[in-house]
Image (cartoon, rainbow, N blue to C red; front, side, top):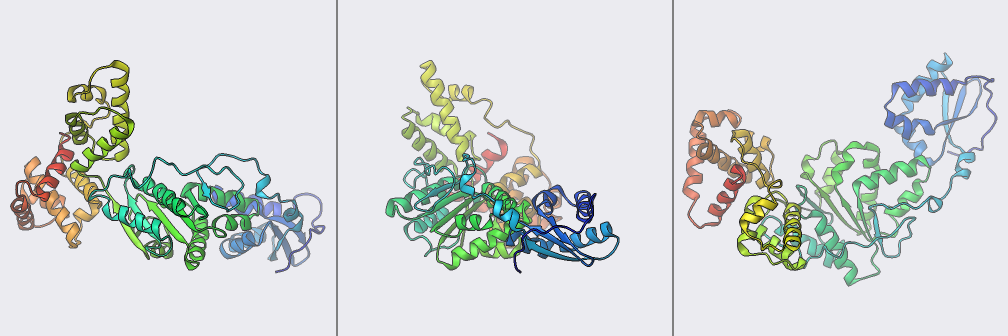
Length: 462
């Protein structure tokens, strides 16, 4: 459709049809829709049959025509008292007045762009603290770490996209930074973009409102060799941004560029994310990270102590690792506090002193319930409580369900029928068989026995 220069409206002085329609739309649509899309429409001209409306860019026009034209047509009909043809044009007066984003005031953001791509904001470096060398690998993150290293060695060629998911503070962001750092060590000319999904969303909304979608696409599609996006689940609240990311993903992937994404949820279970996006998220390699086992937590805190030059006795490391299990970030925070107290007071660290220092961080022992057992077991195995209560018989789910039933019997003492009721009304004989299987498999000193010991510590808060 051709672009038009603004012409004089035929509407007489006073409230125009579009002004009245705009007022109706203000009260009949959401704040997000109105502020980000409807408010960009202005009246260009009107004759007896047609109302010509202007928008600042081709993208905005196409999006409104595709998604909101019926809303606009209904409001105009109501405001005019008669049906009018609606024509959307690119408003040259507004387009000419648009300023390039480079002239906007520079503000700090969490976007990191490295290499030769031009951007309009600061270019902070990836954190040098996060490398593969100081990432402690264990069974809870082994696949994710190996895949991340492989992608860093050969970006865009292996495991594309790489999707890493897991709870907060378990090392996903560390791996993203490690990938970026390794890529740039190997080839400083590689153009690496690291950005949070929240900032991607904000950039999209800001530049759409300014009619500068070409600038947005230039930032994230042109001149990008590696795109790393953190917390992709944030896009669940923005359908329009999902659409733009879908096309960004396709352009980069088709060009053989590397895409690495993280989320706190399995990509197949992301709520309010379009199925076409979920399909692309899982088209490469999906790797989860979950709470590290006891031995790995000890290794993490010792590695951190060595890095910070803290004299940490083995019994203190074991004490902290036994008490803090949910997050690597929590472990590191605990060590920072211990080091500060030891340095300021001159007292040597001991388990008793560590308990005193960390008393507000340590989990409190709580009354046990089947719900609590299910939550802890599900979290440990990277599942949901619905998985444990459901009917799925996939081996990882069935095994975790049996373990949860075992602890409901061992730690709470519930009857088999009661346990069955808590797990989706399973028959009591099913529960009996599950508990017996776990008990028989729990051989002293075996990896499975250590796994159960760790789970019991987490369930009881001991």
